[in-house]
Image (cartoon, rainbow, N blue to C red; front, side, top):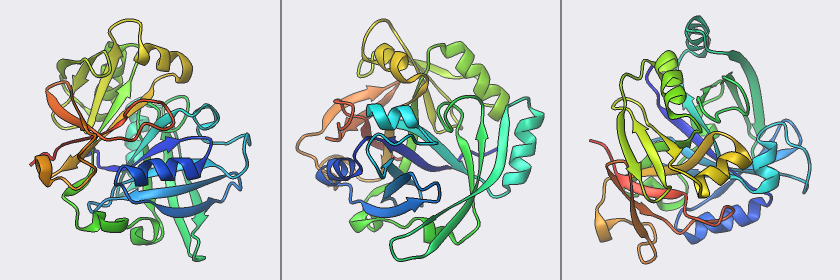
Length: 282
């Protein structure tokens, strides 16, 4: 199965604060509306390849959310990722045959501010919160453009979309095995990252990097608080250096494995950068 990142999720207690953090970093946001569960609502940073960042919170403070409750309540920030599939029934059956725990597909919807109904199907994989390690699957039942479009000037930006999800895991070998079972990932390329103090594993054909803590520190603390789940999102950019349109003055240079990363100024709600820019893969 080809993994095409559909969207990634950032959770926090206050949607307005999340929106401000992304707007301030030069990533324009549009309000997406309320979910049919009556508890959560969301906003979108949409990119020109169709992928997007979903900012999610509860409508009422301290309300219990059916999705990502702890990351929302505790300000966990990056919390999930999803991949787009053309045949969600077939993909779900294939993963079930591979021995992956599969829940779905099931129907979902939300109503946009303009009253338009957006409908899609989801399949959850594995244990725990949806998309915490293995991605969840999504397929539109209404036109995709009704669910997401590029926001603001991102329609003409050199930023293509979400390139890579960085997943924090407690056991790198076990996580590699899960991706091999589910997606025929093959042997990973091993590396390290001082930025997140981790040993990393990346795959040539998958948009994901697995990261295990090298010892005590921020990543180990995050795993203890939130369990295995995304810790950073990397945006692919076709520009270079000062040609890149997103706030350049305060970017911090770093790396994940063998890829150079320019970290943007988004730090809320976790207190450190978690959205970076990398050269888009050709």
